[in-house]
Image (cartoon, rainbow, N blue to C red):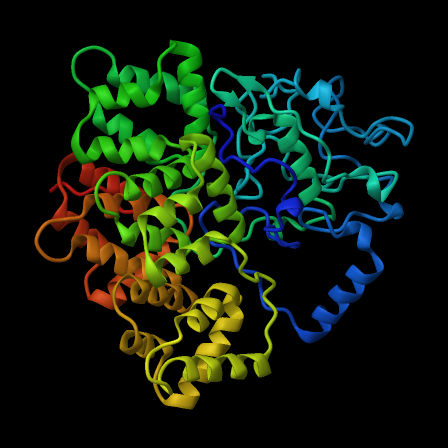
Length: 529
């Protein structure tokens, strides 16, 4: 188990070794967003191909090519251990060519997993934050925000392009339960962030999100104070549930992990265990889900969907059909670490037929995410789908599986448009005619995510509350996984599709502190009733 505060675990080795992280992936997208590359113009595509042809040594970098020699005089984003928080103009940003750019593998085992407290430490790095480029993800110990807006931030200078080595070795820290996740090593986080900042980034383009979240990083975040406030809310007789809601439901997942670390450090107790002992029912399930690292939460939901008798296929579809390659690879690695089993093997043992083949294809996480489009290829794929379905007796399921699991989202939109132009009806309608059961639900989920992901999740929320009773497990899962990504868009789509606000549906199907916690997560004010 990796230490609290790591936000989300990263697979061992460099992303380029696994082949799942696309160059140019924007920094600041929360885990679960299902990132899709923006469509490029033809001249940009040609320019990118020429760049890759002439600069093969840069192809393994995480996100962007490295700065050229003219940037040597610029300052580094992170100081050395004996320097001020950000180096002065006379400071040497990085070691010269005669020294190793980073510690050796042996030094990594002795590295401190978290930065020291005080003004000399760099801001706590995170995979998705800060959402506000002028607000550091975590303040310094004095309470003032770190200088994330420093004009030299994000402009690392190197004496040679090879100084950033994405294949640099990492030695995991051995713990009582196995090897620590790479994300637990703070130096690894620093290196990853520095590699992402290979070129100067304008302040307004540091963060890029697909949607409108309803949970944002808390301003002037103080994890120590939050930990003490939580302890006070649960200490003695009774529990202050409102205090639990105001802290846990109004912090990002990454901030919650830091609160948990401080809670255990100060009180020698596990926050999740204390929450379980002081709350109950759906309110307890919601708070415990929020306190899990988001990757662990996805793994728990997948494992729970396949545990015991029967399988909850809707959960498998919802998760695997909506995440990006990188996110699926990260979940696969963490699933193996937590449960000692390969996710693909578990999927094969719990499903069958065409639905099993669809899930295995999605679990391979090999979708093209370049964002490049080809109208001629879209016409050809639309014809192949037509011949595999409506123009023959029976259905060639493998053709639908191959195209819908391999093409990038922008290309799939073109394919859907061409199919409708050829037949006069949507591909979704054809899928409903040609398929049935779980395979139909899976293919339709892909189509709806391509067309409008907010509407897809709005339909999932509605399904959890419509009819007699409420599927609280599904309701909790969708709100936890989307509140930091696009819950604002989902609320708009929900009201447009069903004629009533999401808040009114939550009010009618939930009650008590559970209802008020859901309100906080979806960005609604607490009501008296």
